[in-house]
Length: 138
Image (cartoon, rainbow, N blue to C red; front, side, top):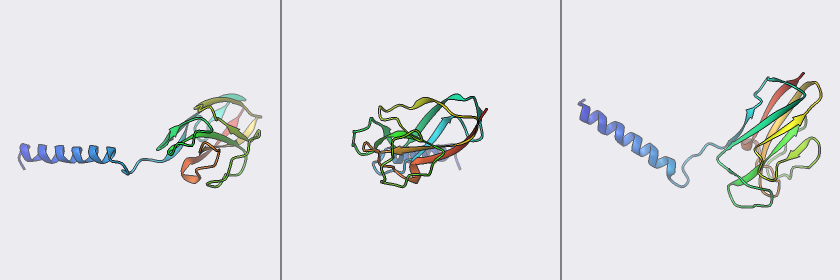
């Protein structure tokens, strides 16, 4: 293969990949993640939790624009199934102003934290927008 042929193949492959990235309906990662803490971390009793989402935009509660929602933090409780409204109590923390981080205080010991992304009416987007980790509070 000549340099020219190799260059053309590389250029066309790159161009096709870039084009597919921006086409409507192209596959986009759909997930949430904890920026911090991470799975298995040991944290002080008061610590910062930072959220991330891919495939959706963060918007405040009440905004029912397709492809948007906001974060919820579930603490030591069961998962919320898709399209079910997330309760509001000490175990189900809502970030309806579009916040992407918070400071929380927990008792010493192991805790399960679950991040759940939900629509403007607080209805869960289900498993693809949910992630759980365990942390140990010292």
